[in-house]
Each structure stands twice: as C-alpha cells, then as structure tokens.
Length: 158
Image 1 (cartoon, rainbow, N blue to C red):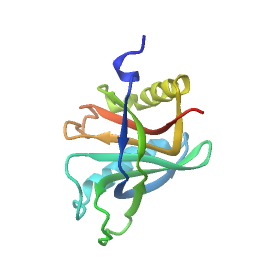
Image 2: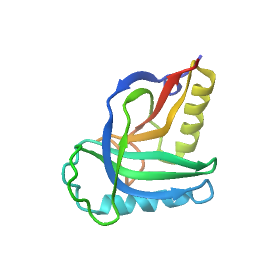
Image 3: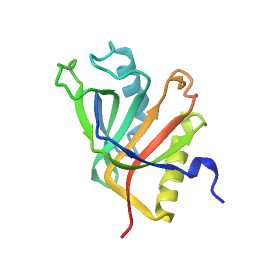
Image 4: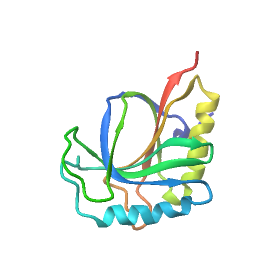
C-alpha cells in the first residue's frame, strides 16, 4: 500500500509563467543549488511576482545527467524588465501528478526517487520534461523545513 507521500493528486493545471535565476547542473554539481537559492532569495522581490510560493524548476534535459534548474517565482505573462541574471520560463499547462512531502528539504533526493518510482509503476508517464518543486508560505528556507510539493507533468500511458 502506498503512503500518502507517494500517492499524488492528479490535477489539470494551466500554463504558468515564472522568472528567476537559472543554472545548469549534473548529479556531480547539484550541490550548488542551495547557493543558487541564496542568491535568488537575497534579491529584491520581482515586479509582478505572485505571492505565496517559490519554485524550483527542473527542465531542459540535454544529457541524462544534465539539466537546467531555475529558482523562481510565478509572474504574470507581461514582459516587464527583469534584473540582470534573471530569465523567464513558461511551463505549459497540462495534467500534473502533485506529491506533498513534509520531511526536510535535505531529503529531496529520496522524495524524487519516490515520485519517479510511483510514476514508473503507474498508468502515467512523464510528459514534457518539467518538474516543479513548490515551496509554499510555510516553508522555511533557513531550516529547510515546512513541507513542499513536487509536481510532474504527466500523460496516461498508451
């Protein structure tokens, strides 16, 4: 029997627009992500930012072991100027498997393993190569606690 962490909500989500700081990582270099978050969190709030959550967006897989990671906030579709070093990203709408985790962020590798283990054994497959980490208002970046969601765009297997 699956526990609540590995039993997602399946939801249809609209396209969303994000702005943030992007960097390329591999499994060997992903230890740089916390520093990327520190840079993102130390900047002034972005104009047009939707309050209440921050997002880690994993996308643009070039090699099996290389991807882009964006520390971001949701913004409107407008093209307001962004601070130097920031980029825009639109995540297409679609069906998402949404998993909630209460453990500290330092266990995110295990959480990702549980997410993709569930997807591999389910009637779904990843669709579109994007995974979102959603950090709501209860998340404390200083301690890495407060819970987070992992959202994977999925489609039913044929």
